[in-house]
Image (cartoon, rainbow, N blue to C red; front, side, top):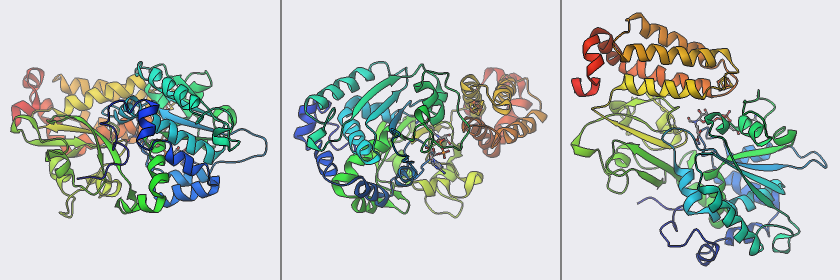
Length: 441
Ligand code: L3W
Ligand code: SF4
């Protein structure tokens, strides 16, 4: 059984409220941290090996150490709760059921970073969660854990919750900052990174909800102990939101030492695939990461089992591997049609492109149109190469990662499932009436 750090108290009735959270030892980590210096906390976070849980996996301690500290300029912590990556719903779970874990993590992190005004930017569609967070903020304030002179330390902190307007692109950190400033959420060119020039041009750390929540157990058990959980550079625990063709969709906390096979088939996690169907493929890190066929998902190219961690999932690069991403784990059984699935994703990225860069603005639309043609039995065999060419021209040529995120699913689908694209083209009538998966497996 995986060790639980974040969700250990999630089953306790009323844990959403301060009194119950406190009874379980809540805010103990903050009390401990506020007796330490910011530099000592930073050392703990670095020692923990925590990597950003939003998708990029960037080392949190390193990001915090990049924060510029010019004299007299305020600094900010911004929590990225714009969880919009298809297949990803773990931050929603944390905020809905354990809001004080996030608030406590923000208190420790804000103290470490020297932020007296911190923000939670939450996706607009999570319409019921800001009230939960604001209630938790009020409770924490009433108990002296937010506001002026917290626990007599002289440290002041206010936390504000800002709702997004429902745009996926506002999950990209610089688009988020633009939106928080009241502007259209267009990503900025980097560098400068937010750590140097962020919110209102002030040094800013933007971190995912789960990353900030993980600061609480790190302070509880120490960074060194946290780093002992997991394997290699995949330290600590990771929340996985599992969905698709599985018996038990939900949010699971894993310690990154289990295999993909165990995650999909064991009763502790996904509980296998309904109706005894075969596993066809999986997208383990949210819709932006490459899809992997079952043979490469259950083992690596060297025949080793594939593990649920950053390194093992990426083993072999994009030719045979994928990414941990945000932990949005989407399972596809033998009945699913990869062309239809890829088309749906292409439509999503085309719709969500902010339109600033030509390769993304135009390319995502072209990819969607070509995929739609193929799916509807009107494609030509040259269209497959055209699709490949378009995705190659998007990848690496845009301001923000949405371009790559749109290109990778198409590239991986063609690389691993070219036969399905060809089937649609060679069987136009069947293509219009049948699902490839149902017809061929
Ligand atoms: C200072 C430097 N800071 C890097 C910081 C940077 C950012 C973090 C990671 O995209 C990915 C994307 C999605 N000085 C720095 C520095 N930083 N060098 O480190 O940066 P980066 O550019 O690697 O990634 P990103 O822009 O944060 C995130 C992928 O995640 N994704 C997940 C999407 C998830 C959601 C969700 O719903 N949670 O949308 C899935 O694959 O495609 O590649 O903070 O400032 N020298
Ligand atoms: Fe906008 Fe796409 Fe360019 Fe990102 S890659 S800035 S979403 S056009």
